[in-house]
Image (cartoon, rainbow, N blue to C red):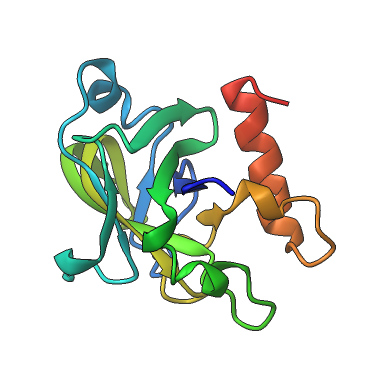
Length: 171
């Protein structure tokens, strides 16, 4: 048995209006952040404010990000001893399979419809383990590749994982 577990996700979907109808992130908004060395970005469990639940970070090369046509994606490799939360991601009732980012906006515009369009941004952390309604974008997704293909994996998660694999060039 491996000492690590891989977690993948779609952190920010492009073109989707947030559930509060206030924000939409434009395609490629994170290209500037991804162009050079990544700043410190951590992956934490469930709560933006709780830094005691950091499970991976870019400083230790435990998390990577890439820009896909449909959003900002990530992959993290976490120690198995940090994985007590993982069953909640894959549970059948009310899975904690969504996420949220702390976005640092560099360039945006608000049009007559009142929706802020984020054109250039970076992030400093991703909070995973959120449930439906608690993530600002309905299209976010978090999954464990080891569980894909199971009849219990929601279709939206399998679809996100398939698009992730295609964008990353994996089959």
